[in-house]
Length: 119
Image 1 (tube, rainbow, N blue to C red):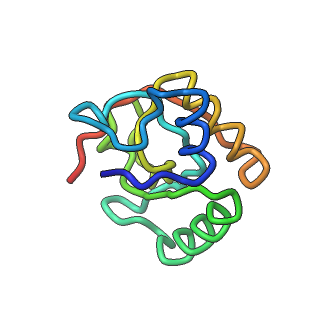
Image 2 (cartoon, rainbow, N blue to C red; image 1 turned 90 degrees about the horizontal axis):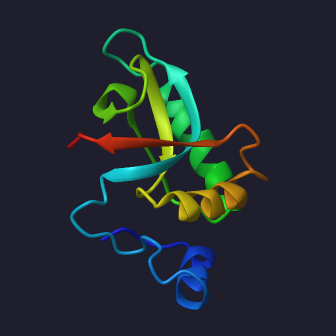
Image 3 (tube, rainbow, N blue to C red; image 1 turned 135 degrees about the horizontal axis):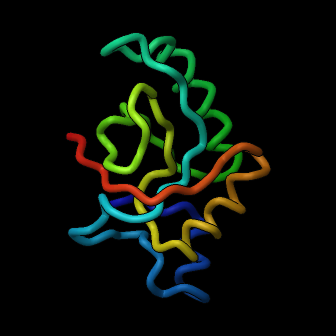
């Protein structure tokens, strides 16, 4: 089950009953909120230890749960990057709400449709 941020759950309860707080079988497909990405070094994530700490700290300030993986595990993302996304895939309207929540901490954040094929 995907953990909700407080803001997302409040929005889900009052405004958007279909927001993906506890996603079903399609939680790996939809609109992803990308907070950042970094080029990989072949099959390795260069500087991942530093990046994950920096991104996670910033995400916590905006009440976001984040995870990272290689971009080539997402059908719809360009390969060759370590990508940091908000936990869970969303409908486009919900992704836009989460994007607005992320922008104060990640001004370059954006949304993109993809399917996650990892783990």
